Image (cartoon, rainbow, N blue to C red; front, side, top):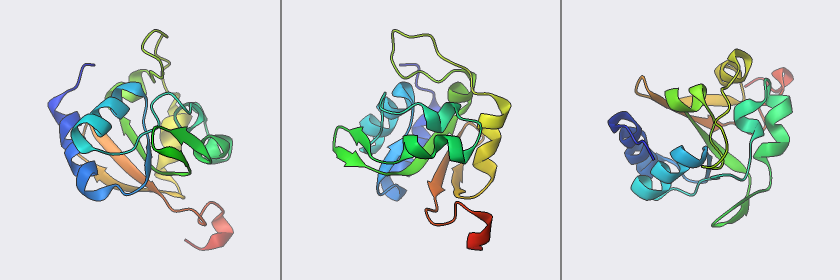
Length: 135
């Protein structure tokens, strides 16, 4: 799967800090699940990674099927490899994230909890999607 040591750091961190469904592409889901024992989305949702805004990604974060059942996404894993190419299915070409798709994670409701220079894990502060929410 091409796991890098820095990705393993993120998986081990997730094991101790992620409580809820983690949106990650196939490669990162494999690492998060295998090394971190974290429930991940694998190939179940595309918009969190490829949508340019939270509003466009929102539907892909709600009611997502995963091996543990259907749940709303609570965390998102983005790393350098994900930015270079989101891989949902191993047999499909990886799709690079646009600059806007990457930048949306800098704004609410995303809250960066982990960053080791390679991988970042964001918590979704549901209820803080709108500027008027005061979050």
